[in-house]
Image (cartoon, rainbow, N blue to C red; front, side, top):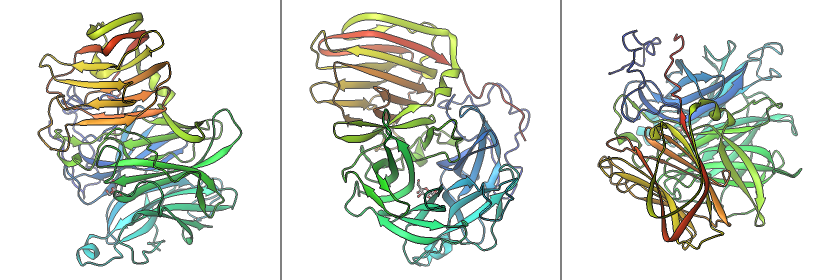
Length: 520
Ligand code: FRU
């Protein structure tokens, strides 16, 4: 099945009825419950905003190829963060440049004048990347522009006064994330600027004033900073509010290539003061980049919901999919916890993801001792579309390492393990199938972790990805994997002693693409 669409054809996302058949979203490696575009190239999530019952997911999109090119904002909406409906492209490149990453808000007080107080506009802010100026060697090729919609995000009009935030002569000047700050009664914006961030404020989204810079000698600096976010979170179990700053970095991620770090600290509407300067990672896997959070989640809900691009610039353009390229992570709820004299961010799949569990496909296990490798039955649960829970116990036996292996009949396997000796998690995809497309792909990702008297693992497995959440999201690793054949065998392993599993539960998951709703 080949789907093509053209930059200039606004109905290009229309797909003929022949295509809406059993082959829909059934290609090898096509994620079954993660978001991916129907066809062609996607990277960062953009413009995440909740409005009128819909979660909007815009994304960096190139509709003419499966590799990166002139960027548009693709668009999709969902009522539950899981089932997505594709909408036509929201923003096209124009004479000011490509449409790079950015954010969107609901302008409830009509500060911009684009809507009315009764019927507020949605306003998006994004980076205009001018490829002509870039080629000419100019340093001012990235500027911020805005666009608005007064019809629930269906039609977007670019502001005639663009750009609203001009480049002062800095090559990397992009990825604005804006939010309303009640404390100062203004909009605020955090922007990635080389290997720092800049913070700006505005009364009306059209006029921006520089407030401060953050980043020198803070966190990781192995590459350029991109796609920042800044938001308050209440520390779990306390009445302390901290501000959390997310900053993606490429290269220089925790296991090579792209990665996302975070800082916690104080923010008075003008300046961010971090609690610590050391590097902390949102996700230790190779494949969670440019993640940001939804704006305008109702107060009654109160969650901070994150989604990332499930790939890595080290190999994103060559992964072995040929109709589309790239998917998003599962949406995750972020929370802030205190421990060891520090604050740390934890991420867990949003609770809505439990709704796609297939009730009849559930297996549970209790009290199991195992040595070496032990295959365990998953019954009717199809491993490549599943959610697995394991609860290991270290209080009874001493053991060097324990973990899980997903394997196929070709003996291709991905190993997800924890070494008690080295105090680290690892995901080994060296012999996990297709990896010849890039020498950067096969390898072992590791993450330092000190387990207590046991470990709780939560895994989400889809056609080409593994997401690992440890101890209620305290450590996360997201990795792509491209087995030649589906993994069908689940094994437990232990080294240096008997492993003890207190209990485990496995759920088959429904495809979110199985029933295709009405399309535009
Ligand atoms: C991050 C990024 C952003 C930029 C966009 C371009 O992956 O490089 O900094 O806005 O992708 O597609």
